Every structure is written in C-alpha cells, then in structure tokens.
Amino acid sequence: MKPPLKPRTRPSPADAVRIASEAAPHHPPARLATADRSLPFNTRLRVSTLAAIEARARADGATLKQVICRALAEAGIAVAPADLEDGTPRRRAA
Amino acid sequence: MRRAVHPVVRYPPWTRLRNGVYTYGRHCAETSVPVLTIASSKGGPGKTTVAMLIAGRLAADGLRVVALDADPSLAFSRWAHNAYEGPPFTARAEADETQLAHLIDTESQMADLVLVDTAGFGNLSANVAMTSADAVLVPALSGEADITEAEKTIRLVAGLARAARRDIPARVLLNRVRRTQLARHAADEIAAAGLPRLDATFSDLVAFGEISHSGRIPTHGAAAEELARLLDELVVLGWVPSRQGVLT
Image 1 (cartoon, helix red, strand yellow):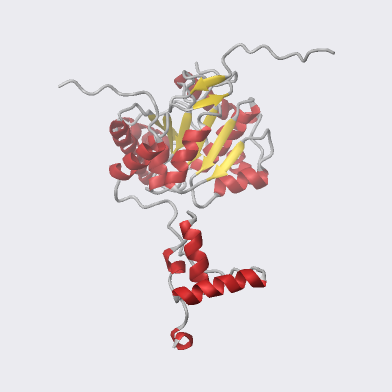
Image 2 (cartoon, one colour):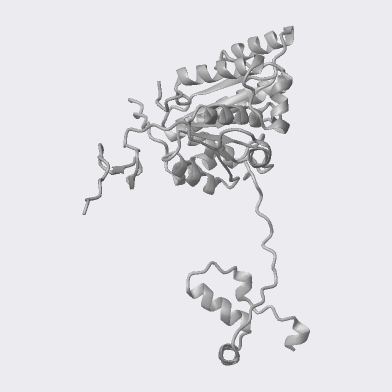
C-alpha cells in the first residue's frame, strides 16, 4: 500500500494540540493550572439598581451575587460554576 | 484642486493565506515562513542562550523576528524585556499549549521568523511547538544524559512529524564544546546513534554566558564567528531566512 502523501502545510492549531497530546499522552502541560481562587469585587450602584437586584434575589430565593452572576452567565460571560452557587455561610443562612 | 496621488499597487492588496483567511498585506499564499523551535527534554543544554543569540543576530540583520517563550520560567522573556540591547524583536511569553498553537499560527503569517524557546522537560507546549515547527534545533552538551535526551527529543520529533504527516527536520547542536576527547566522544556517540547533527558548534566561551547579563549579542571575536557559522548553516538548510528575508 502506498504511503499517504505528506502535506507541506503546518497543521492547524487544533490539530497541533491534538497531535502533540496523542503522541506523548504522558507529557504534562508546561504550566500547571493554578487554583481559581476568589477575590473581592466592590462596585458602587445606584440605590434603585440595588433595590431591583434585591427584589429579584428575594423573588428567586437567591443571593445578590447569584442574581448578578446568573445574568452575566446568560450574557455569555465565562462565570465560574462556584460563583453561581449560594456561598452564604451556614450559620448566617440559618 | 490637486488630486491625491495613490501609490501604485503591484499586487492585489488582499491575499489568501494557507488557512483560507483573506488578509491585507505583503504575504502571498506561497510565502513560507520558518518556524524554528528550540527544544530538548533535558534542562540546561543552552536552549534559551541559543534562542537569544539567534533572535538578536537576525534582528540585527533586519529580519522581523518573533520569539515565543514557551518556558514557564520566562527566562527568555525577562532577558528580552530587561536586558537585551539591540535592534528590537517581538518577544511574547505563552506556556499554555492551546494559546501557543494559535500564537504560532498567527505570528507565522506576519513575521520573517518565528522562534520558539521551550521548557527543558517533556511537556505539551514543547510538543505543540515541535509539531508546528518547520525545523527543530536540539542543543546538547557533551555529557551522556544530554546525548540520551537529545536522542529522545529527535525521536519525538520524528513521531510528531509522522502523526502530522509532514517533514519536520531536527538536528543536534553541540553546545559548550571544549576541544577535548570528551567532545570528540560526544560527537561520535551522536553519530553512532544516527542522530543528525549540525556542523556548527558553540564552544564553551564566556561571551555566550555573558549575554544573559549584558543583553549584547557578540559582534566580534570567536563567539561572533561561531554564531555566524551557525546562521550560515541554518540559512543553507532553509531553517532561517537569509538577510534579505528570502529563503535560499
């Protein structure tokens, strides 16, 4: 059987990653992913905006952060799944 | 009222690149831009120093060089931004294999040479850089471990080339060579293993070690001559463009 002809062109980025991963599956990434730690994020909003968010949160039984993060996720922002959870400490939620 | 004079366009201002994207600029579909990856699965054979020398020398020759630092230690990037003194070239750090693959693809459409410095252990980013390369340079010292790892790297490049169904030539560059029996033995071992080797070598010169601190590429003396010999050989191989930016 004749061997396949070799294309001279460089593989696409997706093909390059696939070939590199398959050729040496035991090789790790050059840089290990760092933990996705949380940081505080403060912003000033108008009273009316805050009241609207609070009203939605109360209606949905969610936190203010959940309401905002859900809206961001629906808008296509890559929100970390952990930020969509209710992170209220148990003793305060009780 | 005088009419504006437009420059004569000698080629269609739009060209179709190999990936099917139309772009404006000087590139044509036949443009072959070398992507030269410097790799070895062992740390310490001088990959970053070789990358510094090639990038700086070719930038001085007027080529548009893009150096991609795929080593998380960022040694090349720090040097390029903090120490390097010479004609400018673009240096970017990217250790993530997916981002690196896209960066090589993008930069290879704009630069005269894309040079990729990789980390000294088996890792996905280095594999991507070798898969996307037009040629791979494998620096090695004279020790047994260096030659063993150089052999592994050359074999890995061969495997990646088979998987990508394209030719990716790779050659060993003997680095920090001393004119001793050890160096001759190392050259014999490389030949016995059937590994392709460049004729050019780098001697164990202080001038090469100094550039990480001085940021100055040697322009005279033995170091400059050895660097010129290496680049001449790479031009003949078609691994780097000649001074005019045209592959020989």
